[in-house]
Amino acid sequence: MKQDSHRIELKSNREIGLMRQAGLAVWQAHQIAAKMVAPGVSTAEIDRAFEEHFDRLGAKPLFKNYPNSTRGKRPFPAVTCMSINEAVVHGIPSEKPLEEGDIVSIDTGCLLNGWCGDAAVTYPVGEIAADVQHLLDVTSGVLALAIDELTHKSHWSQIAALMAQYVSDHGFSTVECFVGHGIGREMHEDPQVPNFSSRSLRSSGDFAIQPGLVIAIEPMVNMGTKRVKLLRDQWTQITADKRPSAHFEHTVAITDNGPVILTKAPTPAEMAGLAS
Image (cartoon, rainbow, N blue to C red; front, side, top):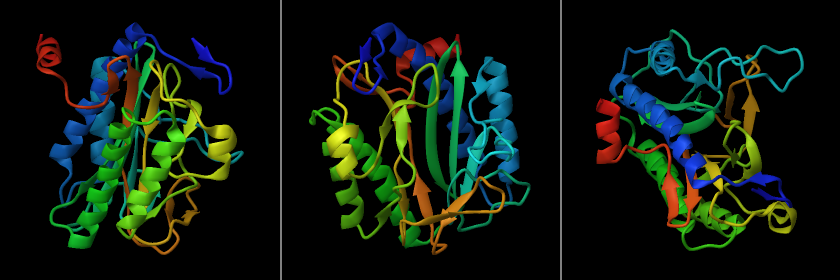
């Protein structure tokens, strides 16, 4: 089914069920990260563990070899984006060990049986500063707010405005040059899913919250300025003031019974299926 105004591909219940399998694969990858992230561990080690995990499942990593929008520049070289401290998004894994007090945003996705899943989590490395923990709490909190509001609001612009206000009320800034996206057979589909309100969103970019919609909601929140800049590796985006940034993301489907997070922990029934 299509919503012609934005070319949004609405998914059937069967297709959402298939997307859940990709979502579970991504959730499992993040459980690997949760156990591995620690001082002395490198992001390259975690990336290799993710690649092995997806390989065991017969899943294709979505990020590895993703083309660079800058002509002639190298495609993304890893299975995960590993963005440390002031890195906002698209950080490249390296052999440099993580240090106590760091934060690392891990974003990954996979294609399984023809359908995609995508999720990001920002992890503390050991003990982190209280203000940095607050940044993580607000960023995960604004994602939870958005998912909850999918039940109560009719259009995304209403939710985006609430998200930006929530972040601002806590003294942080919302990154505006990167947004969420529709997802399905491709990682990036219509619509664009911004985490802030704008005139263009309200006038021509808005979309209805309706059954069959599947979107990746991914707020990126900075401790200081919302502005970012690109590093010489042509991938990593850091905050312009080099203050910390956090990133959380879930793939979420709208069903007749409300929103369903496809990249969250499995139900008991799904656990039994994973164990068999």
